[in-house]
Length: 299
Image (tube, rainbow, N blue to C red; front, side, top):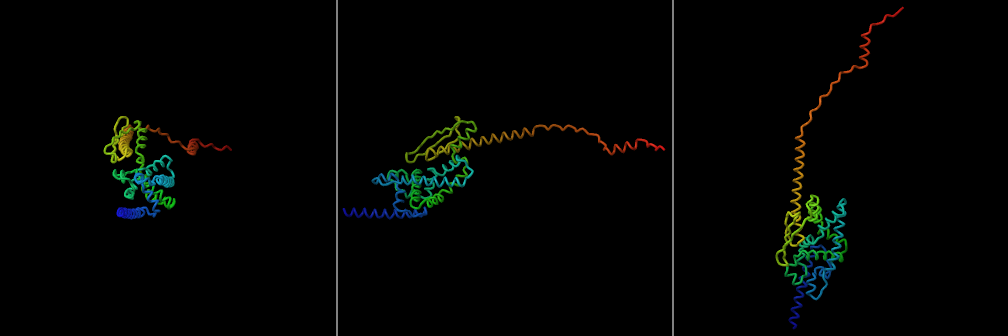
């Protein structure tokens, strides 16, 4: 019995040492040293907590980090784009603060290798799931806020998200392809887009395919690991096709208008009436004086 107890203690010690080493690595990437228990909680997914006696999960920290992230990003957009209306600012924020964008930032930190997952999630590729990576990143931001304050959390958000904010500012219609497509089809009088979505693969690794249809005509398809991602790709394909057709029609109409102007014959100019030169008053006076005889003076 004592041998089993000793073996368990040794295993726990190894696990603790490995965890401490991995936490140090993550803290190095974050640029902050956090209180150990707080960082552990930020990395604890509910699947691990439930399988280990109901440990505290990272969900409260995720809730807090989501608000901190939203505040810093919104403040940045408001200050750097003073002329943008509220609707455009909202689109920019949505392009930065969404599950897919957060997951990509999390992958850049290799955050999935630090998450504490239950066996079920571990076996279904949970370390690379966008939802888990996004939630864990928000929990880590929340932990930095609690441990280091708003200034440190803001600095972390800027370091991780400023490149994405700058990239999103240049996306134009790509901020939200589905909204952009709907606006374009309304302007062109084509109707409201529809999306037909199919899925393939096992539950833990599904692939979604979406087809965008407008007025009964198929314009584009897209694939992704989520229904939303597939629809966005399909909307992008449809937007580009419809926009190209609209631009082509506009260019053709412009060319026809210019050709019609060039083909219109010019009207001949009417001849101008020539006016006889008029003599000045002094000339008239001189002519009169020379034509009349001089009168003799009478004595």
